[in-house]
Length: 311
Length: 208
Image (cartoon, rainbow over all chains, first blue to last red; front, side, top):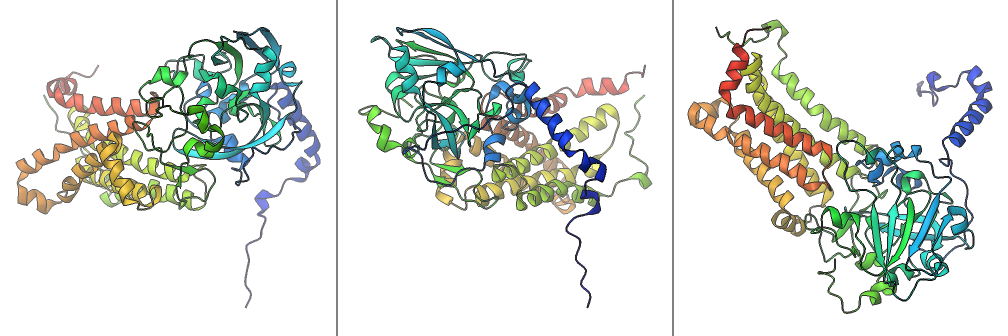
């Protein structure tokens, strides 16, 4: 009996010969277009391995790039990937000021250059109940802060995101989801903790715009929204700085926002989470770990604190 | 002079069965996308939310039938039962996705959720309200209850719609547009019922 298989390649999928012959031109054209769009083109970044990295399976790169909360580019998870290409990330200036001996404006290259880049594969737990494992590339925030020489009076670090409505569609229009600029903060000891990094890349390349290019904070034991993106200012201050989600809804989002399965969000549970990219429709939730599994390293920062009150 | 509401001519009429068949297309489509891993990074949440949203959409379509009849003279009354039942079926599928896929039949966790999380409590309440409405959505029930009692019972759909719209608003962070638009549509459809006289005037006003 003759068994007919459908051909693997449908005629409609075969590239016309003419287009095939022009393939190099097409690629060249794309390169030029991307270069024109600023730093949208990812550049490879070399980095050293770190003992702080987890060996858990990494979340697929496509998911890390497609599923983002970055309200400057819109409220849906797909908005940043759709809209963030408009952001110009070069040149980029970062101001370090406040209670430091050496306040200065840095070009991004100069801020990062003195330090060796490290790859840090961290769990990331979003306050919404999902998580990823992301191979960040960056430098310890402590290195950068030490170079600015914090004064003894400095107790907190305040961070600020770019405001540029002409390139950030979420910052204009009728319905804006947060007050701008997005601001975040850490206690100085949290900021100096070796797990806390400023990331400039992920998956071996410079940060994609939707992930907070060109410079973002990563604090793996806190909910993801503490990881402020596209940073333009880092200030050392004496009093606890304001933080965006806390301004938006102080009952639901605290200054600390440490991952804590026993302190629920007022509207939903924080006891479990869904790992992105882990088996489609029939995947199971996994239990959320105290301090997102970084308790051994960071629990001592909060000795004697009532974590229900300081959520 | 008031014209009687116009029904489309019989031969143009869409059979009711077609409304049910078309109504289930979104559920089948989304579930199929989920099976072939095309629902994005959080497929369970995507499916769950899609089913819930369609339930709310059918509920709002239901609530449009009588204002349309009164204000625009378009009579789609014969499809209202199908739309109401579709709202109920989608609510049931939404709940099933929540129980089976989202929580893997973890009954203690589900129970805590229903008791402790206002958005879950409210969603559950909306579903519970829809049960007697769905159960009495047949001619035999109308005869048994009598038209008046039946109509009064089915006014509970207003409560269900308010709860469903609130359920949506309570799950999001900040104030995004979509749940606000659904809440506004719900409010508008309930408000037109509070002012039947205005509706009548709109319908009898001379065409210009």
